[in-house]
Length: 137
Image (cartoon, rainbow, N blue to C red; front, top):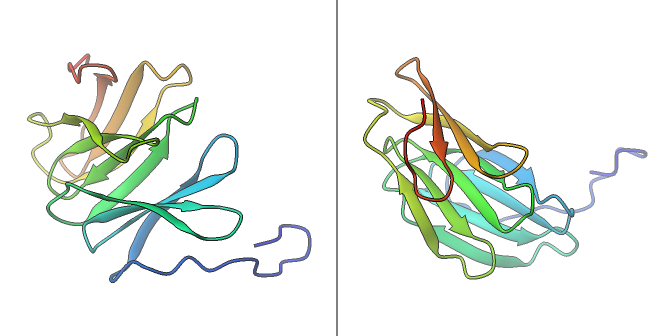
C-alpha cells in the first residue's frame, strides 16, 4: 500500500493457505511472508517476483523477521521450532528447538543480530544465540 494515498501497489500471491506474518527487509527491497501452508516466501518488494520458497517447517509458520543486516530471516513454527535462513541462498542455516513445548508463535533478532528471541504458546519467551542456537535464557 502507498501510505500517502492508500492505493494498493502490489499483491503477493502464492501461498495456498492463510498468510500469518510478513516483514520488510531493512533496506526495503524484499518482503518475507509465512503461512499455514508450511512455507516461508521471500519476494522482491518492487515488483512482487517470488525469490525463494523456504521449506523446512512441518506445520504452520506463524512469525518471521529479517536480521538487522538483512542477511538472515528467522521464522517461528507450529512445529515448536525457529529456523534461521540465509537470504542469499534460501538455505536453512540453523534450527532452534527442544525448549518450547508448544507452538513458537513469534520471533525476532536483537538490534545487533547476535540473538534471537522466541515466544510460544507454552507461555515462555526464550533468548538464543543466533550463531549456534544455544539457549541463553
